[in-house]
Image 1: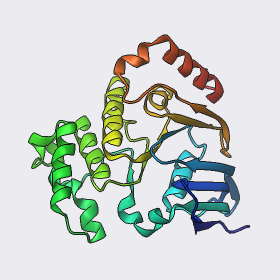
Image 2: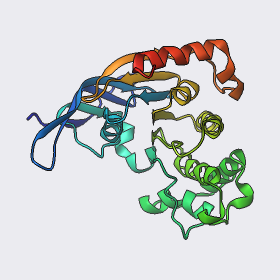
Image 3: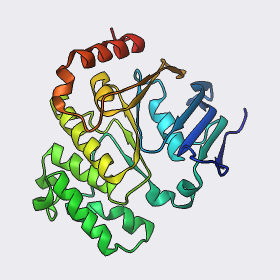
Image 4: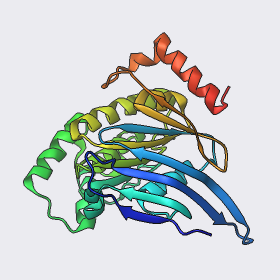
Length: 267
């Protein structure tokens, strides 16, 4: 089995933040049998874009995200990061999961500052200024000293978003972060996400099962086949950002969602 690799990008201008070249993944099950998770995938993550990854359960979306994060080594192909991403990956790349994953005994502020603590970095005055601004943007300024159990589910998710955005990362990876919310709340969180990404000026790779969510949040959507996963379609979303929640009722948006559902086999 070929060994995958991670590499530093050559100095080109402007480089993609991350480039996957024919990346594939094969794993062994409990019985030692080989299972092909991803067929060779060629993909880039560009600066200041929100890339949605859409596909059926088990197609390898999370595995692909973990390869981009450097948490999983591909078994073929290469994953290349921009040099700055490698030099400061601890705070230049952050990740959000399906649950808020807040530390229960930390306040909202302490949870937000956790990446700095884990990276051994001193919290500068400008970091605290940005924290105050982000808490204001997501309507949590009055809850900075609250513990997670004192917050609603949506407030916990907004606190987790602040933690992701506070270090001003170049790239945020999100694995179905709003899956526990209803469709209306997902759109509300999408609005928050778009607002924060505009403030910080970062790229986001966003894994989701929801066609509506992918179309509303992303400016580019790739769609994956069933396992072994491969990219079967790529769609540019031309609506301007920020996006109004009323967009989901517009005829052109509904038409886009029908197109995405058809490609994904959801219809």
